[in-house]
Image (cartoon, rainbow, N blue to C red; front, top):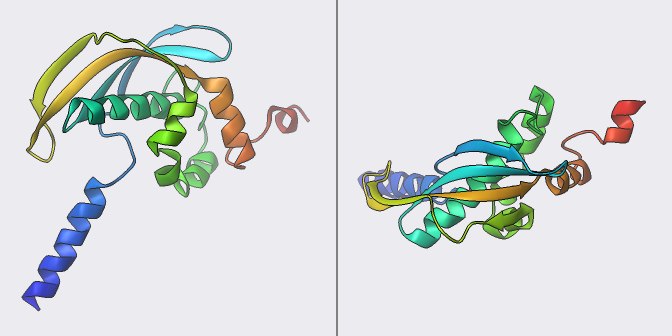
Length: 152
């Protein structure tokens, strides 16, 4: 019984840490770069620099979806529909499709203790997100209504 319990706890911890969702979720809007892009200063956290950079890209997309001045998921129905797809949506290969620019130099880069009490990195960089492409993908997935449907 004790071995089964330890196995279940281990599986839970592994599955919780293996989430594709961003760890940091912290960003600041710098400017609306164009009608289709926003520029953000985004923080990412991870066990190494590569993981922290991936997390900051995810946090940038998360900001465009949930926060910002005009979040794409702006009602409870859209949020509920998106939550069914969020794990696969936040895979780095998918998130990278919406990042049109990432600064090569970091605003800051520090070693920190992560929420799981391990040492890691926290990096802040400027990132540009293509919100028009993000909206088109959400429309294609049936998560948000198309602009044509809203105009009727």
